[in-house]
Length: 357
Picture (cartoon, rainbow, N blue to C red):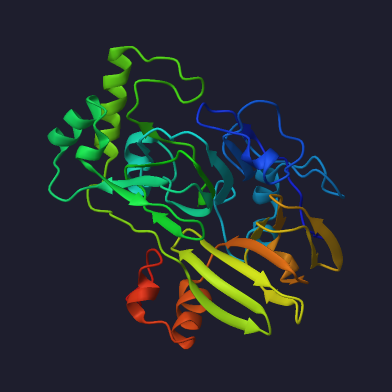
């Protein structure tokens, strides 16, 4: 098969917390009227899967390509039931519900799913004073948490952190969290849509839950809650690449890594890769060269580069987010240590980076 950069359909979610930032401030075309809470840039979630929109593979589903060509699309030797990474733009014009996603073991035990959802948020824009609720304070037990969630008194038990553009938060599965209002993020996560939330309303339309359903949801949330994760926002760690070319590792763990590439005009960014690469544009329109093709990438747009392509070239000026499946030692830990970053700073980017694995 002759592979090329893939442009995909992007399911759109019009949840009640959404706004119009992607269309009105970022110039994203083709969005529906009304609130746009999430665009799923690369998705293999059941019932919400992406399809290729152009070229010889137009109409093919991401699930189908993953099943038929896992080595060429995802990476040599990779096997799994679905494409492993989900990426989104999320416009939290209003606050997201306080919620969590099960970790892998809990998802298999309680949800009958092959994996849970660890995720990370990279903040693209945040209004002054924006905050996020991330994790539960030390010493809070399940009974105290239940009481506070029933009372919607989140600050009594949760950590509220300041949010600033350019920072990233790695959120392990099982961590209770929320962000917004006034926050625009790019999210990368394991492919899953399982979640439990603590609100008395439905996030799809804001309609009220009856008390029995609300309490049942809360008990499922408490079963899947992990008390220990208390992650913090990080600025990322930079690796100089070339004249005016900067690679910043924003977060990394066993399920994904996310980087931000900034490129000036003195030299292009040229990057080899061995697993599928998701490129999403945080800056002005650019041209992506890969597999012998030159493909435009508009602001707030995305491309999926199959592993078989192996190399990408981007001429600046450019500001692009790059998500992929990492070899943590080769792709993340060793280059960051060689660039002079300390072991503790590298380990704080996510999970599995302490060098003991």
